[in-house]
Amino acid sequence: MPTTKGRQSRKSSKAARSLRAWLSKHKQLDSSRPTRSSSSSSSESSNSIEDLFINSLYLTTASLSSNNTLNNLCTSQQKIMAYERRKNNAVADSDEMDFYQVIHNSFLLELMRNTICIGCKEQWNGKIHIILYCSLAFTCQKCEHTIQINTSKMIPDTKHRDINIRVQLGAHLAGIGRAGVAKIFGTMNIPPPVKEDHYEEIDRKLLLPCIKKFQHQSMQAAIYEFVDENEGDPTNLTISEDGTWQRRGSKSIHGIAAVLSCNTTPNVLDVQRLSKKCVICTGALSVKNTDPDLYVEIINNHDCESNYDGSSGGMESQGIQDIFKRSVPNYQAQYTRYIGDGDSSVMWNLTQHPPYPDIKIEKIEDINHWSKRMLYRLEKLTQELKDTMLDPEKKRKGIGGVNRLTKDK
Ligand SMILES: [Zn+2]
Ligand SMILES: [Zn+2]
Image 1 (cartoon, rainbow, N blue to C red):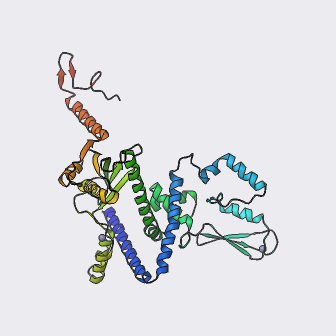
Image 2: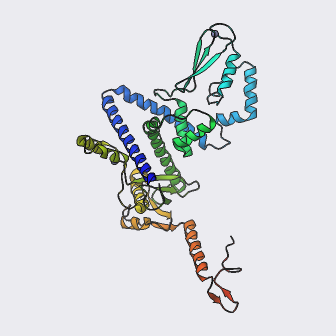
Image 3: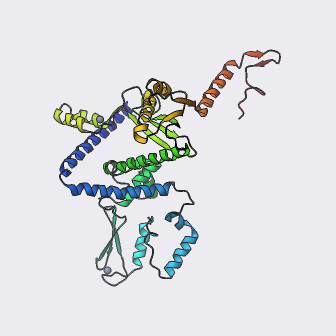
């Protein structure tokens, strides 16, 4: 019981947070509406974040042979070349130094102690102070002269540090979230990541719009590549589909259906999220009785996450149906054959509600799923018949054993 209670309170606090976020977003929209400058600056900022996002994706997905700065710097040859350039008093190329270095504070102190203070012209001896996690101040003990440096750049036109956005992007790419980052930072003896509320705000306001845009462009490119490989014919494409749920079993609140291209390099062509609940709607219930007007305002004006009210098991077929239906308006493409697993009601739904007029969609059985089910049934049969005499002449029971059904691969 305590577990359930804890879970419920966590859920309701998440709903309350989302509600607060909705309210603050709404207020900001109202106050920023008359001014054009604020909207233009927000579009500029999203460009910078987009650049960062795309660059990070290249870095994390590029092959080892790719020509990126980080990989190049890791090779001994590049280090020697950089050393040679430094020795010849060449000015360091700013691009070459555009990366982070994790350094223990004691070494920074050691570096400072090897310099002369510009305040008192004596050998520096003092302390480091950390200001707001993003600046370091070095104060000389003798003359109190202070030098301040930042530990990360600001992203132009935003209040966010480059490093914080990178960490968050990395957490998404690695699928570990803020909690995972906190563990890594804790192990590395690095201060914790930005607070949870701030983290969620960055996700919602900055990263989500970029990811959505990137997702759309990536899927559009995948369709072009797919049609090219299909001899330029967008009306007769073979795709593979599958669905997955946030939780196992048939009670999941959220599910996803995805369609992939069946070409040399399979790519994701489209995804559909299906949710039975919305955190804003749930959060709004807390003010329904105390402030009915606010409740109605929230319900009518938010971008509702809830888009499905059937059984969780039916999410896959509904999602695939939605994806098929929008393939023509979104991509001018038709999926006429699909590879799917044998357990879903996808085919039934596509036959009952044909997405394209006068076109019959054909199903190709997924060999992996088919083999898995075949194996399961054969193993069940072997177990059931193991004590039944099926071959009295050779005195052999069941269907298993040498020269018959074995478990050898
Ligand atoms: Zn000094
Ligand atoms: Zn809602």
